[in-house]
Amino acid sequence: MMDKFFDRLLMLKHSRIFASVPLEDLRVVAEQLQDETYVAGEEIFCRGDIADRMYIVQSGRVMIMLDADGRHVAGTFAQGEAFGEMALFDSQARSATARVIEDAELLSLNREKLHDLLLSYPHIALGLLQGMSLRLRDANDALHAEMEKR
Image (cartoon, rainbow, N blue to C red; front, side, top):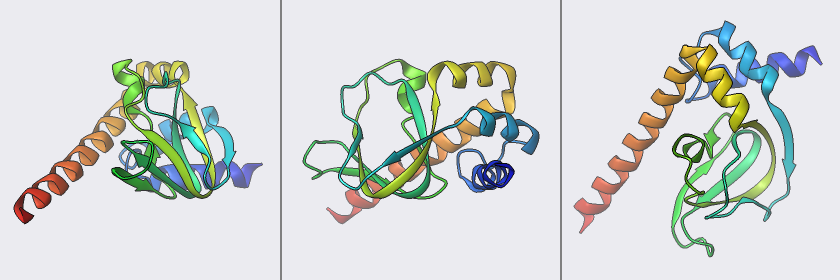
C-alpha cells in the first residue's frame, strides 16, 4: 500500500500539471485519488457529458477527440498526464470525447474534492493553472504551425 502511495506521489511530481506543487500538498492530492481501469476502445466520457471528475493517466494511453469518429484529435495522453479538468472549472459540458487507445489505469479526482483541495491548498491551484496554461500554449503553437503551412 505504501509503495502505491509513493508511486502516485512520484508520478504527480513528474506530471506537467502538478510539477510545481510542493510535495506536502501533493500528498493530500494523492490521498484523494481513486483508481479506475479501462480497456482499449472504451470511452471514458463523451462530448456533451456533464463533467464530474478529472483524470491522470497512470498507465496506458487516452485520446481526446473533438468529434465522435476521431477525425479531429485534440491530443493523446500517457503516464503522468492529466485531462478532463477544464470542465470542472467552467461548469460546462465536456467539450470532447476521451477514448482509451491502450488499456489504461487512471486516477480520478472528483469535482467536489478538487474544489476543496484548491480552497485549502493554493499551490495546487497554481500548479493546475500553470499546467492548463502550458497546454493552451501548446495548442496555440500547433495552430500557428498549421496556419504557416497554408
